[in-house]
Length: 311
Ligand code: TXA
Ligand code: MG
Image 1 (cartoon, rainbow, N blue to C red):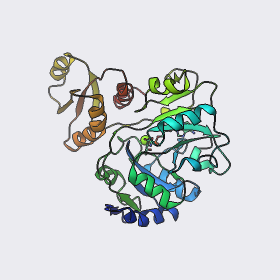
Image 2 (cartoon, rainbow, N blue to C red):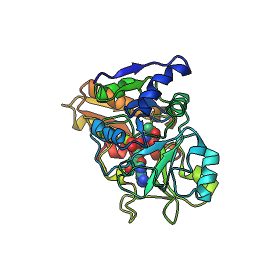
Image 3 (cartoon, helix red, strand yellow):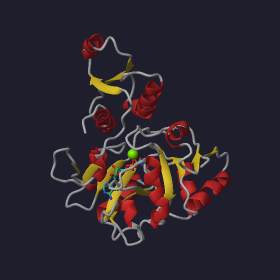
């Protein structure tokens, strides 16, 4: 299959990819977090193609993207009070909420779970594309399974050229790491994946929020058990002057170094792209400086630890 590259200059340029989506084709598009590979969420055959293109395990459910808050009610069984508050504050934006699903959502989207993850992205292209496609859009990050998430259209093509029908090129994504995933179907609100919206920000709106710990009893985020975000090179994390020792220890290897220099925001925006760049340059080891574990730093450290093999 030939993958079309669409660089929209005006909104009407999105009509073509929206039509492709509507018809059950695969279209990658930018969101404010990372690029997603989209399919008509109500079409099982279309969604199945996502799993094949990505090489994604069938037990890892997808996020359904909407462009209008009004579209939520038909996709879920009920909208809890806490969800209403969060939606009012953070949608459109990088917060995915897990609800009980309605019968409208095909099983393949949720990997057979009774719950569905939904988000309304804050990116003009994403919103217009979904609106024009006239359907909710199931979209995981547009990388091959286990690779770092794509933050540019080029990254999407590196992994999926020839495997998807089109990619809409909207330039580099703003945030650079994936949305916060919050489960509101358990007794207490539970962060399944940390992201740009922090625990503290959520708690200001709905009170106590818990974080799913690796060894915790709640085995809720199916995706958490899968390998993720890894460059080909071995990733080793360091803090402060540990770098000297590591450089000495691995001096026969081709080593790349990523330092934490300015803000967590800037670090998040570039980290996946840096991983891909360093793989292209053939580095065997990437030393990455740890980031203070506060605010966005919590989500960054989550991704870095996974990249370093702490599953
Ligand atoms: O920022 C993002 O969320 C990006 C953009 C494209 O929107 N999408 C993304 O999708 O990161 P993906 O598929 O790479 O990650 C979705 C995560 C996975 O860890 C998955 O297991 C979890 O959300 N998830 C999806 N549906 C779920 C459900 N019903 N219950 C629990 N976790 C769910
Ligand atoms: Mg992903």
